[in-house]
Length: 280
Image 1 (spheres, rainbow, N blue to C red):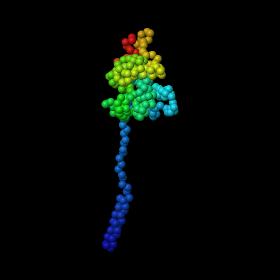
Image 2: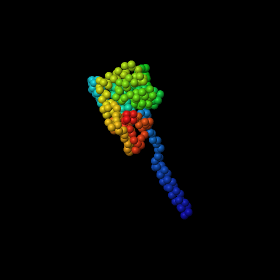
Image 3: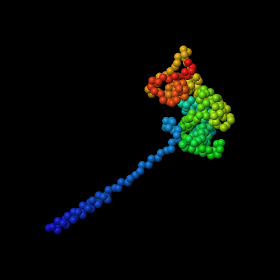
Image 4: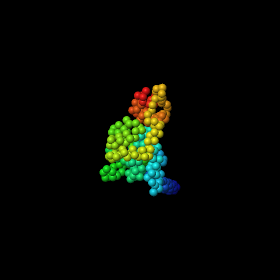
């Protein structure tokens, strides 16, 4: 009887062991995986502009399109960007467009095609974005590469405003495209001695100066009313220097100059002059 009990217990233990073993074997082993994150290298200028779904590019033209058609398409594509840059940074839209047309061959140049570089801006030591190498004054020079043309236009604005050698340009009237063209050459933007004449010819032939007038509201100077009252604006919630400047047809730079501002920071209730205090 005792032997029979031990035999049954032994068989039971064997069955239990087999069952446990089957459970271990049937359980799938979890494979540890790594999440791979690919980070694109962004151009430094990308943080300056909001991203857009549509790429800024010229519509396809027929292969036999005339230069006049190519030029017209370039102006139509980039005029709004040039005017926005004028509002933000005080660079005449006519100058920005004329430089873009001249430097990029109205968008058909090799550097523009492969790098979205519309202004021939070279890498320099401060550039950390993408680069391409292109023959210019010397063979295989380093030029900045942009993911979208709009970044090239913004970089052009920053390039001029952030370098001391171009500061005299911003003392000129915003409708003085001739002064700006000559000032760019004097400051060393281009080595071509005829650079100013070429810009002026492009502006006048295509009447690009009219876009400066549009941004400035049809007048180059903000003047006082006849009764010599000082025109002011009180900052409200949601206002920015850019929105105020646009509302009163002036540039952000001009608005800052009129009010002695060194940054774009403003506060609710702050009173801003809408013309130069010297004009009182």
